[in-house]
Amino acid sequence: MKRVSVSKHPDGWKAKVAGNERASKVCATQSECREFGIGLAKKIGAEFTLHGKDGRIREKNSYGNDPKSIKG
Image (cartoon, rainbow, N blue to C red; front, side, top):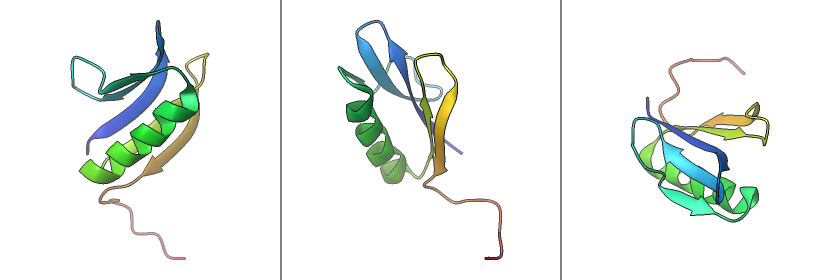
């Protein structure tokens, strides 16, 4: 499954698809990159991860084919 992550960048924040060399987008704010990253994850059916300034995961969601079948 593909993954989209938002993390700190020298120029602000970046949204990047795992395995790609370059960021898909560099933003001034974390919230701007979060919105872009979620949209990108939905578009390509990927898992989304948002990292804080310290690199720790703040948010995680799957917008693709979730392999787990959870009864609700």
